[in-house]
Length: 242
Ligand code: BJW
Image (tube, rainbow, N blue to C red; front, side):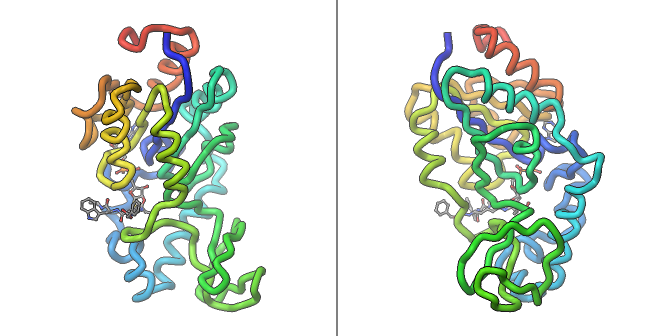
């Protein structure tokens, strides 16, 4: 029977049924915006107003009543509560739906929409509302140097040391709702497999770029698949029978 710590990588697909767009699916964020414009430091330098507006709109979307944790987020929170060893969610998502569902051990490797960061003093700030190119840092008082606390292409993702420590000691690795296009997250499955100890499972709507690297793959909407999978894990079912 499976025992020990679990690491769960999540991506935009886990929040799709909560009403948030994925990036690379049909009609996704990158079909409406050029990622070079809104998700690179160079794009921000060129047109900070466009980038602030992009993140302001997404931040406001989190306030929408319809945007709430779906059964996949809730099942992962339940797993953390009921599993007898640590369960860590490593999310590429910048929304707060895992926390709202009740997950406590969550690392946001690509940052958080409801936070800002001052480029003058480096302080990470809670930022629930709109941010502008003139916003004042409440910590150091400087104007115009607060940016969204998100990780753009070419920037180093957050919490990498803790993430690799967890990957190096996990007994099970799950990847949920991510297309496997973006590194270093896309490389986690290969990293875990190198150790040759922990089973790796992909739960996604369709095969990701790295699908062949997983021991097991399950396809369907996360809101249906994840609760079923968590239920089976907690019952102690053999993974292969899920
Ligand atoms: C469902 C579903 C449902 C739908 N149920 N499933 C060449 C080779 C290798 C690497 C590089 C390279 N050139 C450059 C790089 C590095 C680069 C990179 O990976 N580029 C690739 C595009 C090639 N990476 C970086 O620059 C990163 N930094 C870095 O590498 O630093 C170096 C370093 C690393 C480590 C240590 C030291 C140094 C930074 C990456 C930053 C990514 N930022 C973004 C935007 C910011 C946040 C935001 O605005 O939200 O993060 S990009 C965007 O993609 C966002 C996401 O987090 C990320 C991943 O997307 P995700 O989650 O996979 O979404 P989708 O849409 O792609 O997929 C959704 C999936 O869900 C699909 O498969 C659907 O089928 C599925 N799905 N509905 C279940 N209901």
